[in-house]
Image (cartoon, rainbow, N blue to C red; front, side, top):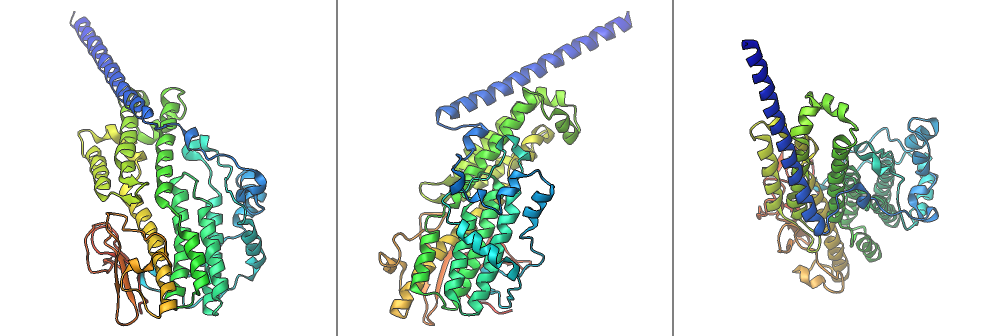
Length: 451
């Protein structure tokens, strides 16, 4: 009799737990689907196909040129693929950091092997489009073999530009710099976070060379105009918006594969070390909802494309919400969301400092043109309009302009108040020999520093 009662009690408990699990699953599913429907009405799309760039004609596509086409025409690790991947492999690098006011003073162009290739690439860059044959439907497993190749080529152009500056070939250095910028912008519409970060890395190579020529007074008015025209319309905020939406939508496909098609369920179970059926019942829809809500409502809303602004307040709100998930009761129930959500502060700092550098470079080119004509820098930035610049970019983080001052020693100060939005006197905050872009300090256009 006792055994029978125990069996009945256990069976009843299992039944109650099953009902609770089913109820929680339905509640979280409804929460996600209702939220999704609300945002779809607003025009938001949550599938990968909405993020896939349109195809372009092969003969106008930079990605179909001889150095890049083999990366997607051959299986990975085949001989043809490896040959294409390793063609521009770089064995050593030159340390430089324009942000700290350091030039590449000792450059030796020892890569004559690449001269003919770089000439061909410069010609290929005249093609108006670039769409690599990325298999977007593969989601997080999509192969991006072109990124290292395009970055290596940009490095070669940048290194040669630095060498040309040392040899007083400013025209050649500027052309190589423009090619570096063009290489970076081949990734403009590629909506992967890593692609946008590689794009930024390449663009920063071009700013290194521009800064070196600027502090040496090597650029002519014609070269400065060409540089201004090349960087004028670069908008990294649009790129990161594309990337964040794709990250979100790849996560959505991943959830769909597990909940509806049962694809990747064993891999997820192994990764989390928990019974997947238990996870699926309670937490999958809840995690999907959290990922979409935080990226859409909190991170993306901090990017104002139309006004070209970044909201530090909104980024901090997103950070707090992610931290709240980490510190909540049973944080393991948010494990998938915490694993897939991007580190919004680090990403936005990277994007913001690069866009600020581009905006500053655009203004500095105008300042140099003014100096060439008037033998001095203007007393205020408004004096640059309209002859040297059409629109003066403002600070990314608020409605104010960059802080500018012309000095008695024929120099100038130009800086952003930075992420903390406070005027810290126009200097970086250096911590452990690295610039801390987050908590303290401003973001200045640097002068030359000596070790």
